Length: 320
Image (cartoon, rainbow, N blue to C red; front, side):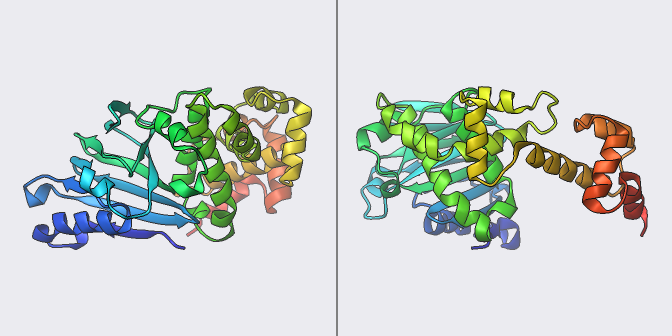
């Protein structure tokens, strides 16, 4: 489905606080939302997307406190897990006697079956991912071990998941149609692997990590497109697999390493050459920044892909 957006700016000042509370309760999760008392300080921009059973909610809002009270935790609604992903600023998740402080790029889990509190003392700039507990197929003891822990450090399963979820939330083109349907399953498996990796039952993570390897490899390649050291060997090393295994994983997804990298680097250059107003960067500098061997090689490759040299493409965008 398409993303649904909602903003307090469309409402009278006196109605904004209650409208925001009702939107979160009805469309995301029933909670008690503590907001500023002065109506003019209440503001929020909310975007909600459903990707199969995974819900993605992006929020920018005023400082607030969120309570999932004992009464609400006992309510007869569907048990779900949430993942908070910090975009900017800082927030805190409290549950089960633990607290996780989140800074940009960090994630933390919390469970609606037990009380929790979220503290946004300086405002909200977050993505929230909602996952039905029943879809995870994990023992409750495993889930509990992962709650209210700060995750996202590089080189960990949590770090891989944080990077993947950041890309997923920030890419509207992935939220609809075939892309949404194709990504819903691997996204859920990666979340499941992250939960399992926090427990002493690491055997539970092996299956999901294997199933999501192609997704994580492509996400890594996309994040390192401008890195001149991006090679099959570097990608394989980052995922602790052999180069031969890497080729096999990519082949199952219909991907050839060199062709994929070249195509996505060209697309990045095409976007930059289409900027209005145009950048002052030279074609040679652009080619070097995106790891082409020379300006001449870049021009030939670009023309073969888009039917004209890069300078002609830039000039065409300059024309009213």
